[in-house]
Image (tube, rainbow over all chains, first blue to last red; front, side, top):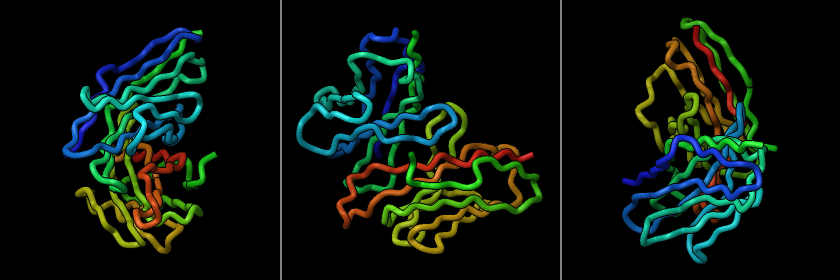
Length: 114
Length: 116
């Protein structure tokens, strides 16, 4: 089985400051890791993924994430947060390449304060 | 802009009504999904269709009935729902593994269902 932990319920950050949203995973074998964002009253949007290769993954809207196998983590980062980044962020893991069953974390509400 | 289109955006129905949610994608994806999402919670997988065949049913009550008429369309038929079924219903699609599926899902904007 696979699972994801997002330890914080809400992340508050001032506009212009670095933003980090934490994610740790548990999976047997190689993980396939994803970040999705959900703006109010919208569906989920894909941000970035780690499949293999470089541990630093760059995605949409200036976000990046670092895969750390020893710490089983895949934290999402943005160097300078915008008010428009305020949203609900979900980390997800898949056990197999192309697996149809993703395990989502509980989500983190990010609030960027002007 | 999402490339997965869901209709209707909002639906209010009584417990005796029959209604349907519709989803359409034109990305050539061969896997389509229904998820249920409660407020501020992660989406919960309900059904997966792969090549128009039902491949995953996560023990969903029979009052929810999925249908995949063709590779671009996905329906969710609703009958005799309960108030606790009120939620945002999300459709998603992904490319098939044989076509280089890298796993990401493309979501629609959702259909917000209220059961009275």
